[in-house]
Amino acid sequence: MKNTIKVERAKKNWTQADLATHIGISRQAVNSIETGKFIPSTLLALRMAKVFETTVEVLFQLEGEN
Image (cartoon, rainbow, N blue to C red; front, side, top):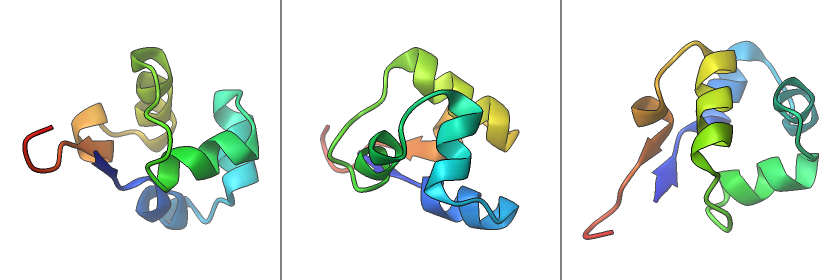
């Protein structure tokens, strides 16, 4: 799964720590999601979409035959 979280953070001029504070997780968790090492729960994905004022589909896309 790929994601556009880093791009969305840049649009808001947020650090990983800023995003983590907004959605209630650690900065390390944000890093793991951005790098694809961790796939967030539906609830967490929805929180991210809300703070970025976009949809989950914009933030996360399936790659290949996932």
